[in-house]
Amino acid sequence: MTVKPPAYDKKEYWQERFEQEQSFEWLVGPQKLLPILETSGVSTKTRVLQVGCGNSELAFSLFDNGYTDILSIDYCSNVIERMKEETDNRYGQGSDIVKPRWKAMSALDLSNLYAPSPSSGRTPNNAAMSANFDCVLDKGAMDAIACSDDNDNSLVNKMEEQVSKLLDKDGIWIIVSYSDSRWNELNDEAKSRWSKKVISLEVTPTNLVQTPNGPIHQPAIYHHCYILHKL
Ligand SMILES: C[S@@+](CC[C@H](N)C(=O)[O-])C[C@H]1O[C@@H](n2cnc3c(N)ncnc32)[C@H](O)[C@@H]1O
Image (cartoon, rainbow, N blue to C red; front, side, top):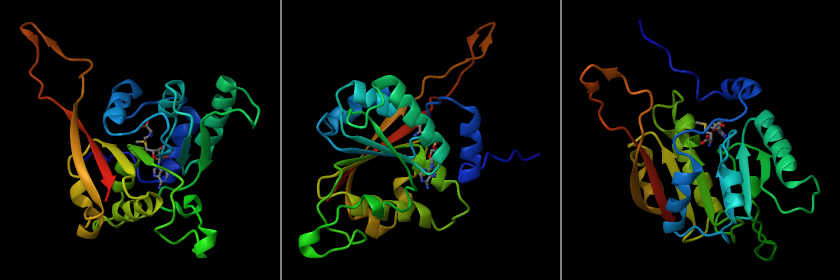
């Protein structure tokens, strides 16, 4: 019998999940990610866009560690509403208070976030404008998008195109993924826009099965952190 994986590529799956689930951290927790951000050139002054935030603690952790400019997006409006409520509970309700910001929108259409450049007459759909963000953080969103039946990786490449238009030269895109082939799914044109470094993160196994002779042998499992700098 083949076991069907959950429909990670479907908005309905996530919407339904967020009706029940209060908090879940995919792949790695903020404690492990924050030092990687620091060594990758991300600082508390960096203007961060988190894509596919879900109900992760990451934005709160960043904020509590001194990052003040964080916008998190997800295409599920129910989780965004919940995260806004949680933010008000933690940091206060006033609209003048500096706190993490949230917006329901798709990572596959970031055009509303592109900075328009009135002097040049460019429209927000145009590339090469002065950016509103210095760093895009993706922990598990591209993984979800890559679960679609899209055999030619068109959605992964679409996401790259959107992120690439959002960032200026030297902008940073950090993708945390369970997959060691995420980069290879990008087409040559997409790859040519970035310099790449990959960090393998060993996953600490939980619930190791004990045998009379000790824990059973278990191969190491890794997640992958792609650190991309815009060329
Ligand atoms: C694996 S979860 C990761 C959640 C969170 N980043 C974390 O690390 O715990 C994937 C998230 O991506 C969101 N997502 C999937 N496709 C998306 C899209 N096209 N635009 C925005 N969010 C998307 C889902 O709603 C879900 O919250």
